[in-house]
Image: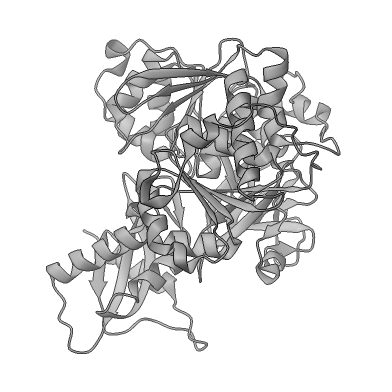
Length: 543
């Protein structure tokens, strides 16, 4: 999508959006290539047992068509929500393409979510169907009776818990399917994003969201694609970073994607994977980079040759950038965005000088500014809200079923990210801090509200507040301040029990790694927890 140019300013000046009135993600990323180059490699999957399987775009079209026919036969219609509770795997990609082509709405779900997290998301969006694996089937079985809209569950590991056998039924379907003729503004997917209070909100995106991502993806990978490019990320495809920063943009361009599910990220295995599969491009969250930095002499041990690395989630310091140059012979490009409006700022070593500690310039096509509380643009050097002007193809349509929260996201025609920043004289944007209390841990954005709700469901807990505290490896870790019920005694055993409660009911990455028992929580006069005071206290008390 990006025009050629020798500098960021030249590329931006020449850039024009090309968003057709009618557009479908599934057709664009799959059927387009299956028509013109059917044997082209789409996916290279390293399975858990070490075996490798490859899929062409023709394979993906055939499988997605069969799945679309099956879902339709089972009663899933245009506009219905389909949960996709799967890790990085061929079935995950096929499910997304099928759902988009049939005009339904995909709802990506993280495999580590517990039953409470899944029940809320599936119930909130009124999901008609779920596609999952054996682990997910166990969780869905435990809550299916509480989801009145859910009528179809397909399991890729067989007919477990009485659910449909994904592969057996898909194989019986025709591989001919006529995609729904969708508008670019028609809804395509809901990605749940964590907020500071209450339950997560479902960011509803249109089909055009993929086109909106392209300038940021292309510039963050030094003008992607280039001949020989092949991309991988350890980020789960349930998150916007894995799905819309890697998988779908790569397939838009006909670039092969490497898929490998890590049960737990392994830095040595990451280097090995990059070398073994000829990965040339990668999205690596900051925590992954920090873990890979601990690997000794990777250049001597692994025969890799990378062209670009993009990273987002926190500002990379000079030390990590220097390590990247020594280790990979390239400058890691930082990018910035959020689920509601992603890939809007990026650095690009190919066309602009890098500035350590600065996240980059607005990606071509996006009007990003620093504004005040009234929506006025602020001059360079002034601290304010990082905001994006609408209309913008990458911007979400609304929060699902939550018009009030949608309205509160905007100041006039500015979408306010909730982050604070400064603009410099050259148009670079410096991230200063979050205006809200979202926690960034190991690349995940975690909202305290959902964890607090889970904590107070524990029989020993009366009140709870959650904050993020600095951590050298994970950026932040989750810390909980807990007020216990009368007669309950604090202790190490109770801490472990509370931690396990959150791990199993929400997700392993959301449990509080530190818990402090307190007599009371600081509150505003209107009864809101003052998390800032708790965060400051936690920082003071750290060794």
